[in-house]
Amino acid sequence: MKRKSDPIQFVLVQYKSENHSTKLKESLEAKKRVIQVLMEMALIEQQENQVHLG
Image (cartoon, rainbow, N blue to C red; front, side, top):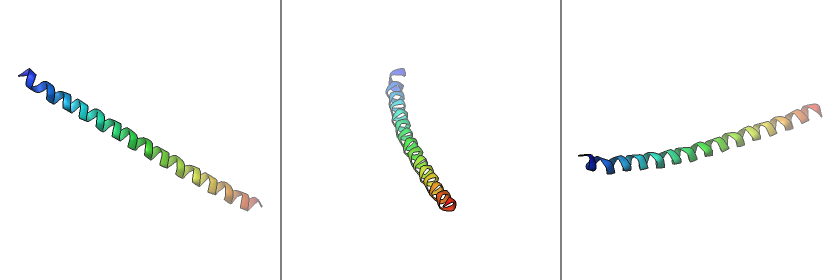
């Protein structure tokens, strides 16, 4: 009985690790986009402040 379950467990572990790395990549991409948006907002805010001061 145990021999039959071993390959199934291995496949599940392999699938989970692949799924995890995909989610990790997606998370990193999302973080990059958030940082990019925040930097753009900060740049626009800085430009607006300069306009008000000028």
